[in-house]
Length: 235
Image 1 (cartoon, rainbow, N blue to C red):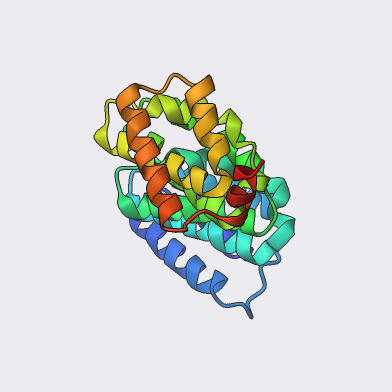
Image 2 (cartoon, rainbow, N blue to C red):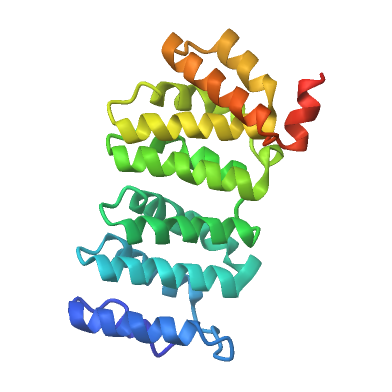
């Protein structure tokens, strides 16, 4: 790993791409050691890749972080604060592959127990009102994925509901549609509590509320509610 360190900061794009490919091959081989003199400095030198003008360099940087999180396991935790914001920023990237790889970094970090779903939700909050519509949409998608992988117990979802409700009236059609689907997914997890909260505490436009109720009823009729949601219905 130490052999890659001086090469990470090269500004020559062709060299950077070659270094990226070689590093990914190295990290992908579980027999090769990831020991190095200063892993913190190594990660610090990968972070600028995420802001590079070349999409492939950015994607390689994100993949390197996913590999490191996977192989370092819980030892990756001290470096989460360094990588989290640059990775969230890439959720708003114009390239599908970049957004997908940014999601994978964050999901891997949670899977390894280096960051809790609640920590991620706290960090995602500003993204829900970001000027970049792609970032608003991807933040909702990541919230849904996290919810499905870790469950509603792991997050204080009530704190995010006002932001999601606001996105029901977003200028972007994709964001409006995704926020509707996100609320439907939260309903699968928490049940009638969500419907009651939306009607009592949140200023949901009437047409949107009717759409949501229809979605909730469809989920209920299809038997798609999770056990936690079913038990909350009986309370």
